[in-house]
Image 1 (cartoon, helix red, strand yellow):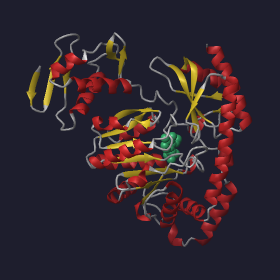
Image 2: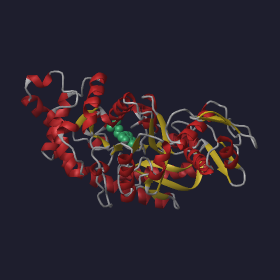
Image 3: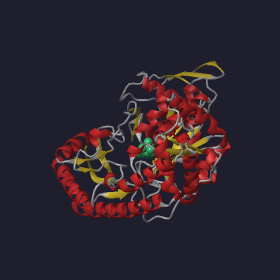
Image 4: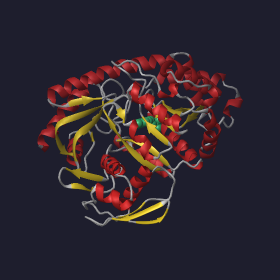
Length: 473
Ligand SMILES: Cc1ncc(COP(=O)(O)O)c(C=O)c1O
């Protein structure tokens, strides 16, 4: 082992395969630096796909680290998909995780949505149920009553009307603890995350942890803002909070109400541990509460934000409750982050469109929004039940996860199929299907959005899907 200085460990393995690793000079935890060095070696091609790694004992000795650190690092990178571990064959390189491979088609776009008659696109509400008449009536009222001044350049953080209405609504429905001054209106949750990413980068945050799997677009947004993204696995209780410390991240992006895409809720014990992690290191939790309004047969779970308002940036959106095309979202922020975030928003687009903000504010204030939500909840529950029945009838042996809430469920097929052929076969049959492929392109996990299809369409779509799957086997 060579040790060139006290901050840098350079090791060349002396037994088994050769591996030159340089732990960066940052002063983050050793575990994070080791994991970063391994990722970098794979990314840079110094470790080629299928190449075998030194044993944990050898690498630990060569780097002068404890074996536990190396075991943990290998385990983390296996979970992230960089490495593969096979019983008796040691650990080898799987290659950089293919971006976007876990949830396909993060960008629905007009080319996809609505084109196929049986499109199980995850996360779209029923666009045909958008309350057009209500929106139009309310917009008319807004136009009639708003002073000319309302058409000036807007407050970049949002109109006072909408920030006030959101404060009351989020407090009542999600238990969010905030004030109008801490709310910033954004162009969807996506812009909220983009602005947070930029703001955190300016403040010196370099590494952000995310759940894995998650919406690949969110990893992309954070990487585009200059962050290194550390992937933390998810199990049936939500994200593995105990793995956060070792990532060395200063912030984490989570979906506690309905994990995207697995659909599980973060348990109360993990919520407490998450908050403790944030408080211990002055870190930030970014809580994406994207479809939390839809809960069917589970006890209400409030937002994590309520447990530590000064450590959580809460992200919400009208995309699932009204329509993604509105591009309306919001942030509830710790006091210290409001001004820097509003600055990013001002630099980006100078604020959201005023008339839509005023319209949404009025719907919230008059409880019309609550009525829209209640109707959507009833409709979605019936559609979810239709999906459960159709799968039981057409694809017996399929297990469903994440049914208690949200707009999509995760179907686990009894046996894997080729993901690309499934998507192609589905398209030919008029079915939009979104498998989560493994490294070999096989998939036994389908993310099925059910909110945007009628009950008969769900039954027919699943029947066709079963035919496509049968033909592939
Ligand atoms: C995990 C997740 N968060 C948030 C959103 C909402 O994003 P936006 O408000 O930008 O439409 C989505 C939309 O698909 C999503 O899948």
